[in-house]
Length: 180
Ligand code: HEC
Ligand code: HEC
Ligand code: HEC
Ligand code: HEC
Image (cartoon, rainbow, N blue to C red):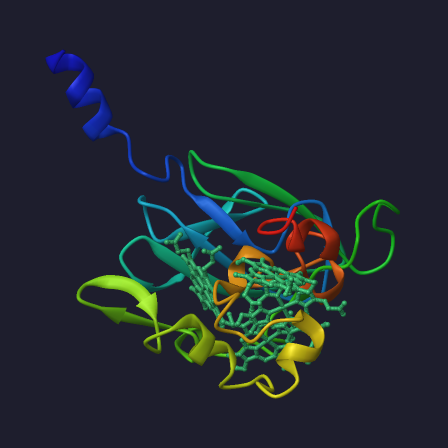
C-alpha cells in the first residue's frame, strides 16, 4: 500500500514531458518554434544536441531554431522525440506544419503565470482568442455563439498543426461532441 502511494507520488503528471509543437512527422519552415513541457532540465535536444531553451515558467520550455534543410529529430531527454523535415525532399506523407499564430507571437499573447500556475492571459480563453479573431464572424462558422462552445482547444490546436483550420477533429466529429 505504502510503496504504491510512493510510486504514485514519484510519477510526474507528464512523465517524460510533451512536445506540443511542432507535430511529429511534419514538414516545417526553416525557422521553427518548439514548445514543450518537461520537468527535467530546461533543454531541448535537436539531433541529439542539447540547446538551452527559454522557460517562462517551471517545466515549460520554448526555443526558436533555424534548421538546415533535411531531416531532424527534436527530443526531450528521457522523454518523447519527434521527427520533422525542413526544406525540399520531405517524405510525401509528411504534411506541412503551420504555426499558430503565424509569425511567432509571444506566449504572453495567450498565457500568463497566475497564482504560480501557467494559465491564460485573460479571465476566459474566449477573451484570449477574440483579442485577435473576429467575434462577429464566429457564429457564421460555428453555428453557435462562442458562449456555447467556449473551449476552443476542444476542436483547435492552439500552437499550430498540419490540418486545415488547425482542427483536431473534422467538422462532423466536432459537432458530435455534443450532438447525436
Ligand atoms: C494562440 C494562443 C496561444 C499561444 C500564442 C501559446 N499558447 Fe500555449 N496554450 C494555448 C491553449 C489554448 C492551450 C490549452 C491547450 C489544451 O488544453 O489542449 C495551451 C497549452 C499550453 C501548454 C500545456 C499546458 C498544460 O497544462 O498542459 C503549454 C506548456 C503551453 N501552452 C506553452 C506555451 C508556450 C511556451 C508558448 C509560447 C512559445 C505558448 N504556449 C503560446 C494557447 C496558446
Ligand atoms: C496574437 C493573435 C492571435 C491570437 C491570440 C489567436 N490567434 Fe488564431 N490566428 C491568428 C492569425 C494571425 C491567424 C492566421 C490568419 C488567419 O488565417 O486568419 C490565425 C489563425 C487561426 C485559425 C486558422 C484559420 C484557418 O482557417 O486557417 C484558427 C482556427 C485559430 N486561429 C484559432 C484560434 C484560437 C482557438 C485562439 C485562442 C486559443 C486563437 N486563434 C488566438 C492570430 C491569433
Ligand atoms: C465544436 C468544435 C469547435 C469549437 C469548440 C471551436 N471551433 Fe473554431 N472552428 C471549428 C470548425 C469545424 C471550423 C471550420 C469552419 C469551416 O470552415 O467549415 C472552425 C473554424 C475556426 C476559425 C477559422 C474560421 C474563421 O472564422 O476565421 C477560427 C478563427 C476559429 N474557428 C476560432 C475558434 C475560437 C476562438 C473558438 C473558441 C471560442 C473556437 N473556434 C471553438 C470548430 C470549432
Ligand atoms: C459544447 C457542446 C456543443 C457543441 C460542440 C456543438 N453544439 Fe450545437 N448546441 C449545443 C447546445 C447546448 C445547444 C442548445 C442551445 C442553443 O440552441 O444554442 C445546441 C444547439 C444547436 C442547434 C440548434 C438545434 C435546435 O434544435 O435548436 C444547432 C443547429 C447546432 N447546435 C449545431 C451545431 C453544429 C453545426 C455544431 C458543430 C460546428 C455544434 N452544434 C456543436 C451544444 C453544442
